[in-house]
Structure formats: structure tokens, C-alpha cells
Length: 393
Image (cartoon, rainbow, N blue to C red):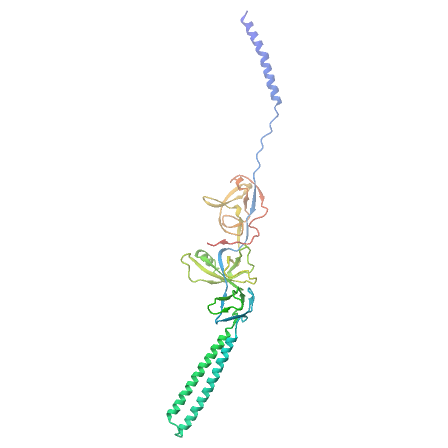
């Protein structure tokens, strides 16, 4: 067989197989659907708050103790049976109101006895005076010696002394009788009285009742030297520039505003603090002597300051910063300096301008230089909330 015949036969065998493979590939390509062009992901959504100025009254908080301006522990000054109690525990009493009455009969009898002694001493003095006058006349007529007149003059002086002693004893008896009526020395409120009528009371019995003046009332609290210097440099060391508020144990604020009254002249060496006293109106008697309260001292005239929500603040090794939405909705980093502000907010003293949009939520999805989709925050934590000063140290 010729060589070309063998070659043609092999070529004839390959040609149908190759044609079949090409047809199958073409059919597979026709079955594949066309792929759409790839789409870019939308920028992440973040919540933002617009930077604004609002009035802020800077201040500080301290732990204080309530003290009554006037406080007296009523005690018996004489010994006797307690005859009557003229008040109920917790009553408001006025100056001069009777509180207790001790059995008066023995002391009234003592007054009567001393009065009689005074009258007798007065009679003896009158008689002695008459004897002296007669003696002088008899001496002039030489009817009695001078020594007798001298004795009568001495007797008159002794009668004067006895009268003075009797009068003093009468006064003492009257004082003792006056102690049978125990009266309030100022307007205030009566506390608990441990003794009921019928008991024997005396100077050693102890306190019969405590009366305190609780409106107004005093609040004492220690202030650190650092905080005191800050207030003084701000021109608010006292007077009308500083307001004093009290937070009650249940977290509510007392409606009345107090004023600073006293600043101690020495500092506590162990704590480096100065004791400060403020006077608070207490018409509803919500403040009680000895009570522990939180004292809020703030500036009387609020100042305009930039306030942002606390949630916008972030901190790294370089300090605090915030993320803001800048041009083309791209995220920018702003380094700031801050100070305590309202509840849920922070006062920014440096690093932000009014109108900037700070990211308050979604900062974990924001990257500096990358665009975001800003959405307004529904309610700013630092919106209309009243100023809540920082805690003083």
C-alpha cells in the first residue's frame, strides 16, 4: 500500500472526532447565561449629631452632711416629778412655747418661805434703824454711852446683810421655780422624748428632747484645694456667682437653691481639703440634721459651650478624638479636648466647630477617608438635659 494512502486514512479518522468535540463545546457555550457587570457596595450608614452650642453651668459634686443651724438638747435643771409634756414628738414649736412642766408645788412653797424670810429681815432692819436714830439722840443728851450707839449701828448693818441674804435666797427660789417650766428657746421642731410624765427627772437624767431649727438648714462639705483654686480663678469664690443645689438620696434634686455661707480658714492636712458650709432653704423639711447628701455647686450664670453626646467620644494612645462626616460624606478624625458636661454629654473646649457632624453610632463601620451614609440621630443624649456637674475629687 502506498504511504499516502495510509496517511489519508488516518486523517479521515481524526476529522469526524474533532468536529464532534467542537460542536459540543459550542453547545455548552450557548447554554451559559451572560454574567451582569459587578456592582460596588453602598457606603455604611452611621448616625450623626450636629455640633451646637448650649448654655452650660460648670460645677462639681461633693458629698456633704446636713447640720441644723440651731440645735439644743433640752435637759432638766432641777430634780422633781415630770408633771406634763406639752407637745407631740415631731411637732413644730415656737420660741417661748412650754415643752415640759415639773411638779411645781415644792418649789412654790420654797418661794413662799423665802418671801417670808425677806419680810422678817425687812422688819428687823427697820427696827435696827429706829434703834440707831434713838441712840444718836440719847448720846447727844448723855443718856447712853457711845459704845451702845456703836452696837446699835453694828446691829443695823447686820440686819441689812440678813435682808440681802434673804432676798438672794428668794431670788434663787424663784429661779428654781422658773425651771419647773421648760420652754423652747427658738422656733424649731421637737424630736423624740424618751420620758413620759410621772418620771423623776433631774440634771443627771439626760436629754428630755432635742429641738432643731431646720428651716433654713446648713450643709457642710469638704472641697479639695484643686477645685477651690479653679472656682476662685473663675471668679466664683462666693456670693451670687455660685449656686448650691442638693441631690437627695433618691436621686431627685431639691427645688430650693442655697448659697455659700462660710469657707474655713484652714485646710485639713490629711485630705488637703477645706470645709465649706452652705445655707439651704428647707420649707418642706426634706433635709434632716445628720443626713448625708450630694452637694452640687455650679455657676449661677451658664456659659455657652460646644456639647456633643458622650457616645461620640473615642480614646486611643494619643488621647480623645471623634469621627466627623466631612466633605463628600467622608470620615475624618478630629482630636479634641473635653471637659465634664451635661448628663450624657461632653463639653468640647478645643478641636470642633459648630455645625460639624460627629458620628454617635456606627463608628465601628466607619473608616477615616472612606465615605459613609449619615443619618440624623433621633434624640441627642445631651439635648435638653440639665447640667450635671462633674464629681469633685
